[in-house]
Image (cartoon, rainbow, N blue to C red):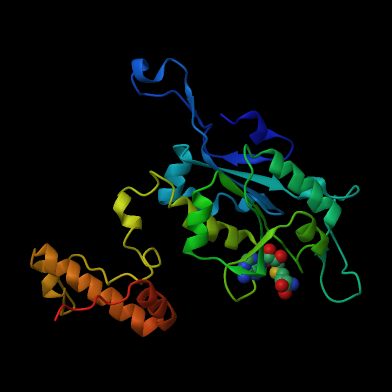
Amino acid sequence: MNTKDDTALTGRSFGRKSIRASSTPSDLMGETPVLVRAWRAEVITLVPQAFPGVLGESLTGRALQEGLWQLGTTDLRPFGEGRHRNVDDTPAGGGAGMVLRADVLGRAIDTALDKMRAPVPLVYLSPRGQRFDQAMARQWASGPGVVMLCGRFEGVDQRVIDHYAMQEVSLGDFVLTGGEIAAQAMLDATVRLLPGVLGNAESAEDESHSNGLLEHPQYTRPTIWEGHEIPPVLMSGHHGEIAKWRRAEALRLTQERRPDLYEAWLAANPPKKKKK
Ligand code: SAH
């Protein structure tokens, strides 16, 4: 089922070909099949076997199978130098560890970019990068896809980052051994925002970080567990009161835990002046 570009040289692709016939009546659409341009991620990595990983499970996995998005990997190894396909070398100027070579990365990046059907953000996963957040996920989800480069060892030759004007993005203020877990985390956050990936279209709306507030607490059955009750208002069936309670809880939690978010939210939502 792979399209030609998915099987090129090194690429492995997960997800279905994105060509589908329209189910819309022919008098509206004509007979021509509609080419659905599925959102596509291409990940350059030394460990392609780590993909789709957790992205192949549950909601993101089902969406991948249904062709709502596509995932390809570009294996770095075949682009390596010499008989052993070396991809790294010692750092110029000395020091510990190994650095991924510019020439090897350049060939892999060009190959990955060729697999994309439109210009997309070219991202280097890096602890030095801008911190990933919901706004970035939303921005990526609104485009045609993303190409991600996963570093390993001490990282990549700086000239590659500069030459391709790569966007450096960090998962957080800690150091991983490679970019793959960061790539999967960011792709999960992005893909779940694509139309049709979440079952209930509303479930992405009230969530933490989507409206500037943390989410209110959630409860489900049993109604009494280990002596703890569900807040009675949630069992009242009174939708207005429930919405008010959830709002108040979201505000309380945000103020307590993330004063930075709370201040930003207040600035964007100034309290309404009461009429005298
Ligand atoms: N020497 C580098 C760290 C290299 S870690 C430094 O001090 O900045 C090896 C690779 O793991 C990196 O090239 C990067 O791709 C990935 N990585 C590590 N931490 C990361 C983080 N917080 N976010 C995204 N990618 C990370």
